[in-house]
Image (cartoon, rainbow, N blue to C red; front, top):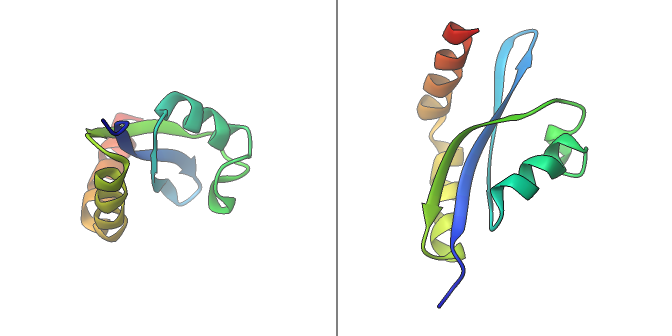
Length: 88
C-alpha cells in the first residue's frame, strides 16, 4: 500500500496582507518546520509560516495532482487569506 500524501497551504503575514504557499508532503509537521527553518522553497524563506489548510490523500500521486490544482486556484487561496485577515 502506498504512503498517504498531504496537500497543504501555509500562510504568513506581510505588509500587503497574507501571503500563501501550496505544497505537498508525506509529513506535514516536519515540512512546516522546514519552511520555518529556512529550508523550504526559496519563496518561503525568511518568514514565519502557519498551516492554514491540510488535505490527506491516499497516495503521493493523488496529493501531487491536487497540489497542482490548488496552486492554480487563486480564488480559493485568496478566500483563505481573507478569512485570516478578518481574524487578525
